Image 1: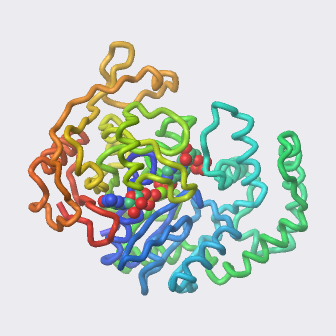
Image 2: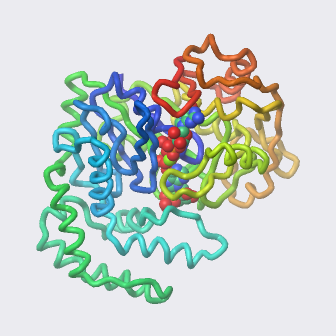
Image 3: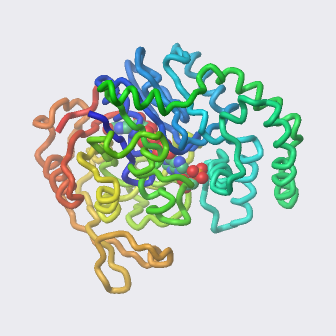
Length: 422
Ligand code: GDP
Ligand code: IMO
Ligand code: MG
């Protein structure tokens, strides 16, 4: 059975942990979109790893990891990430990691262009991770970007690069940002690319033969459904299709290769960066931050925290075709007396159960809540669904009912072993 693991909120739902958990029974794991904006935390045997571009299966021996064509790849950043995990004792060999030669390349000036766009937006800024994601995808859609296959031909790359660098410099000068020399960019990128070369190939035949020979494939989503460029809270989104459809376009595996879609979501809601967040709650944010929780894995920024929003989740379950929910961080609510669940929004007096498309409507969306009693005890040692407190099970049942999707897994702590099968 091949499975998509997709985030249902605004990212950081705990996808890394769930992929790592499901990896035991899988052979291949594919990243099909996003780039180093992702930060996936995996804690296993007491060791913590934060992965940005490397699929979480890299921590397992004997599994194949694929960075698909839909990913935007920063060669300098990826080499640094490989060096970091290798220092933690993880081997990154060509057998373990395959990189699609169709993946688009994040160049150093893309990151500065990301900064420039944010400056230009002023107080309307997106709050990006500044990893060059938007500008690289823009070049892809504009049909002017470089792909990994182009870096295999250094002469072509060196010949094409000066024009692109000149275009970028023109923008950067306007914002007093550092400008670039094409020869220096080419040297730095091609030097990093040397480390990656043995990993580059056309990933599609490999993925198809894995599928045809009955191997188990996992798709590791990055970001979350409400950050999807089509379905998210536009324009406060990332620049890729983070929802399940992106797995096909970003890997070359077709829809009929996939049987299961696990939607990962927290037992509450978090968001980092700007944009609408109807259920945000200062008290809950402060409470979780005081516990040392909810700081971004990529940028270290504190995440805003709020109550469970089933308007978002209902919609995310629909568009992703979620077959099972993986609800993480249930333990984050352990001490709360009363829990709120947002069941709908009131927008200008109308009750709506799905997110609005009109960006201005978000500012007028007032959550409609129902309240459930908390369980007020520690769940972190629970290992079976039956062991969970009665009120926690009632919360999960209502959660599933409002999202119209069954609960498949429940997380009661960050470690691999703190995952319960429902
Ligand atoms: P991802 O981007 O979706 O992989 O999620 P992140 O790794 O950015 O953020 C999720 C955070 O929650 C990380 O710090 C995880 O270690 C942590 N986490 C995941 N599941 C659980 C859980 O069930 N309980 C607790 N306490 N932490 C969890
Ligand atoms: P994972 O995979 C949470 C957010 C940024 C910003 C918006 C656009 O760890 O869940 P970008 O740099 O992509 O142009 O930023 O998207 N964002 C994430 N938020 N988790 C992520 O990834 C994110 N990747 C991007 O904060 O609001
Ligand atoms: Mg994350």
